[in-house]
Length: 206
Image (tube, rainbow, N blue to C red; front, top):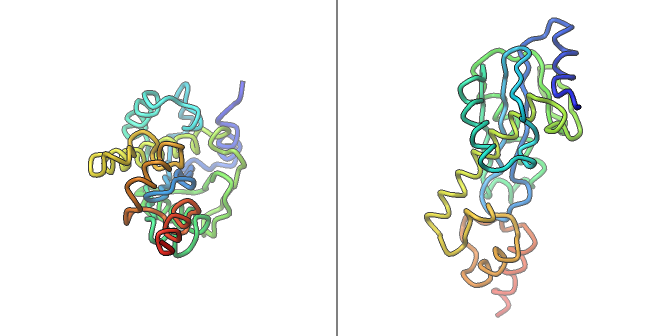
C-alpha cells in the first residue's frame, strides 16, 4: 500500500510542518485556461481514498473538493488563460499558473512539493514525478485544480451548448473535433494547438 505521506513525513522529521502541494490541470485541452492549485494541509492529514484526480470519479472528486476546501490550512488557485498559453506556450503557462497558485496562499509555507515541474522559488522545493499519485498534498492540489477547471468548462457549456464542453472538458475527443469543424473556432480556443491551428489555416485558404 502506497504511503501518500512519505514525502511529508520526511519533512516533518526536519521540523517542517507547512507544506504546499502544487499541481496543474489542463495542458491537453484545446480550449480555456490551464489551472493550478497550491494546497497546505494540516500536519499528518489523511483523507482516505484521495489520490491523483485523474484516477477518481467526478462524484469522488467533488466530494473531496468540498472536504479539502473546509479542512485545508490554505488554498491558492492560479489561472493562465488561452491567450497567454498561445503567447508563452503551455509549458511556461503551466509553470506560471503554479507560481500564481503559490502566491495566492494565505498561510505560511516552509516547503513546496510539486508534480514534476522545476519552479524558481525562494522556498525549498521538491519536484516529484507522478507526484499527484505519490503525495497526499499534491493529490489534494490536483483535485482542487481539476474541479475548478471542470466548473469553468460547465460554465462554457451553458454559453456554447453545441460544443459540449461539459462532456469533454475541452480535450480533443472525436466528438469535440467534429463540433469544432462544424461550428468553428471560438475566441476561447488555443490558436497554437494543432487541430485549431489547422482549421484556422484551412479557412484562410478557402
